[in-house]
Image (cartoon, rainbow, N blue to C red; front, side):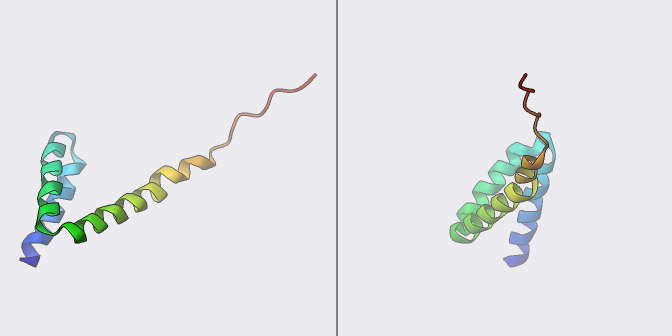
Length: 71
């Protein structure tokens, strides 16, 4: 059962890579949450936090426009 669940997690992750298969990825997430809700909820929350800190938070260090000169 563990091997099948691991293969299903990998397949669901691959479904989210391509735009045409994202609907199947959403269904895969639903099935994974039905199999073991506590484990996969924690796993998805950790993945979301990691995604936020790796990709979204790094954009805050962009240089801002300088303030206009006061004459």
